[in-house]
Length: 445
Image (cartoon, rainbow, N blue to C red; front, side):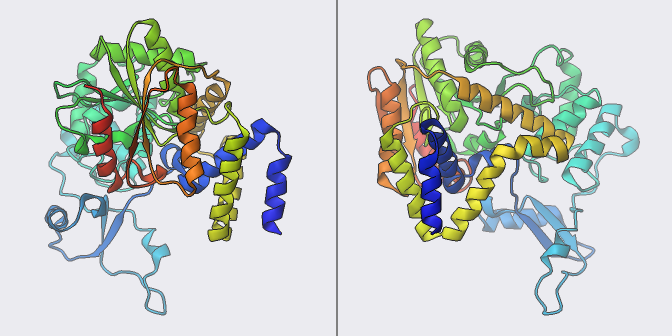
């Protein structure tokens, strides 16, 4: 009965609405990528029963020697006793109340801090939910992540500290960040679209375009696994600092991104990695670069081209089959994710009414990206497409993804690569290691 009701609801939609609905269901069931990269992230926290001689550095060193990187906790919380329930099991609710993390004793006296260092220390403690934080602590080693970094930037700018995401990525301690701000006196003059993840290398760089969340920090794992002689840059959206000055079209956004790319690489061919939302940017880059007599290799990460505007009965059938295959295996999970997907439609109003200031700012960025993506008019392009695919629950869906890019390529210039993992975990350990190998293969030198 549930299956029939859902099927009738799908068939009752208009072709465009049906295509949009199925695309969102596919995203929810297969990846949840926009949520993971635009609004929420998970991290591994360890709770340790220690003693007065507890040494965080020694424990981390031991874990590094005995565990793979992705299993090492980003936060380690010391406790006198592990809280338990009456039945003897660990009380997870009480564990989550413990915020403080043991760090090495601060190496800098607070009296020696500059005004900027004191402000940033307060902001970091507020965002990361623990103290004390030393000005030489690495943001990403003490629990910082992509979403928290955006909060840091927004709060710092309100205090008059003009930080951009690329500065925080390059200078990951308060001490280094404040030194960078002092040297970069023109930080308020313009927004930096280009974030250098790795400047070193003599080969042609790869440019990674943000997804629908606007930020780029989830690409940082590539630094560890892509071949070391390859510079890596990311392109981030405007508006992440809380400024309402955002791009009004994909065409305008692409033009700015190309200008930023050509500062570090004046001539092509360009290697541009796109994922989810940024498929639109890849398509438009190929068109605009062709007008400049420049070549591009669009490295597409498991993303279907133009899902909202290139509807076809074949694609609808493939997605319906994929949806019900998942539904038969996990009906309750499918229903749950269906209703979570409905939240996508009401989230702008939800965040407007109940969201924090930072959540409201991020939602503005995401809404703007969504709107300009929907308004974009897809056209054929002369660029090369390197399509990196993960396993799909239904083989016909794989074919639909491939055909969608062939449809846009003026010469059908498509190369296929296959990797382990799924859409959601492409840039997370351990899958990012396999993905990086395929990106290395796909890059045009």
